[in-house]
Length: 155
Image (cartoon, rainbow, N blue to C red; front, side, top):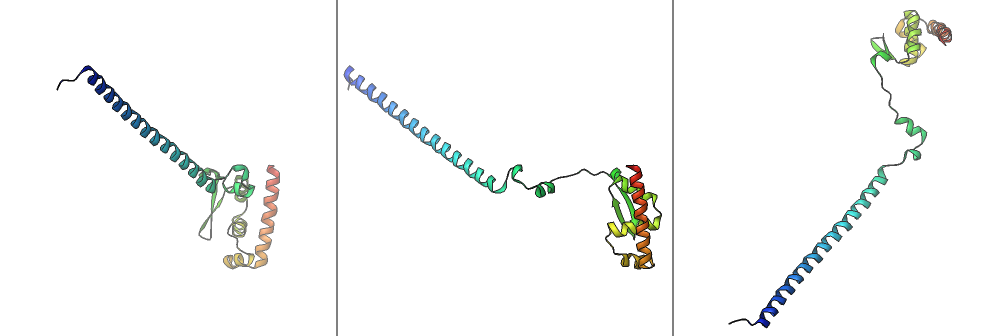
C-alpha cells in the first residue's frame, strides 16, 4: 500500500510528536532527579551543621580556664636540667632555678628537690637521709635564703 502525501505528513507529524513527547518526558525526569539531589544535599548540609554545632564552639565562648588547657609549649632537652635524687630523675625546667640549684651544696639541693619536686614532708626526708626533722627544716630554710639571694642578684 502506497502512502499518500497526506498520510506521509500525518506519519511524520506523529513521529515528531512522539519524539517531542519522549524528550519532554526525559527532561521532566532529569528535572525531578536534579531537584531531588538538591533537596537531599541541602538536608545533608543542615544535618552536618547540626552535628558540628553539638561538638564545636567558638573560641569566644570558651572560658579562660578551658582555653588555658589547650595551650601547648614546646620543650627541648636544652631547656631542662635533670637531677638524680633517691634514684629518681627530677627535671627542673626553669633555667634560673636550675642555676641556683647548681650553686647549692648537694645535700641542701637534694632537700629542696625532695620537698618541692617530689612533694615529700620534712619527716619523710629526714627518714631517707637519716637525720632529724629539725635538721631538714633548717637546711631547707638556709637553702631557700641562698636561692632568694641568688635570684635577686640576677634580676
